Length: 480
Image 1 (tube, one colour):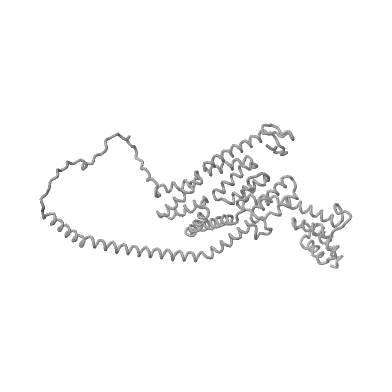
Image 2: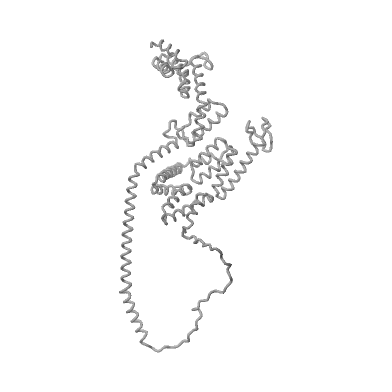
């Protein structure tokens, strides 16, 4: 166990840190509770109580966010349920807290090492989102088409299966209810305690799949079975008539002929017309079915045509999301994983009161692809509290390079000063001190136009700044 204050190694049974004297009783109790909840989640996962395991592991991480075993197992469970993005997020955070000897490295490599499989995961996410959008806007048919593709690509995607089953149930058709029950029965083996799956199956309790026993009818009070003799068929025990040779007779032949004639008459008057009527009904039914199918097909074609533009817009949007996930099309090329790694690194530096390093890490984060509201809030808080310090630090270095002071003592370096002052402006474009010294650097380099540009910017945009008087004086020196 590591001390929460100084991070020194401490025996788990110790009540106090030998290095800094921190009391460890409460901390040890918290770590123990986190480990107990992790073990509970592990046992639940072994019997496929994935919903229960997720709850236990989340509670474990609430007690101890550094419990990488719990975080890695939570990622594995998310992956098993088809939640690829959630799984990768947990593994990336785990890797940040424990960079060495962490199973999260192996899990991430397994996902990213196979481009085809990674593309398949991306396709399932895009199609699921598209289907969810269609379902929310009342286009159930299009949603069903998309979700069928999703569950074919990833049969264990629990939420996709549940949504497809719900859409089938909403149609009210018997065949669709059977399809819904098949889907729910299949994913109930992935997560045996998923309350949504169980609730949907309860709604379909009157639907019987092929091979399932019929539901048992419950009576108010069933009498206890009594031991009785088997029922005997009355025709089973008849006296056997003794064998007796009969004399030849013409009556049987006559009876046969009469029976044939009567049968033919019945067939002509009753059976044949009935057969013809059935044939006609069958033809009419088949024609009606064909007409309905054709009308349905025409309707589907019309619907697909009407949805073409909407699908194109959705495809464009999803491509942009996919490019952001893959690291393309963003301002700094930062992938979702790299952005979260840099955000966590910025948090770590900010917590250690190293604001300049925190700002350097934060500038590498692509804010546009941060998915959670908490992550965006952390980004904004760190930016607000670090960018000013970073701008000031770079300004002071740039000023030293301009004056030949500090680490640049005895050698003025205007090009280096310009680079440092530009970094200062990257963090705070309103830093008038940096704007003024940028003008001074270009004035010393005899680049009059650039020098005037920076002096005029101070005069025009920041009239209340303390650098306005100096900027006007420099402009007069340059002939303005």
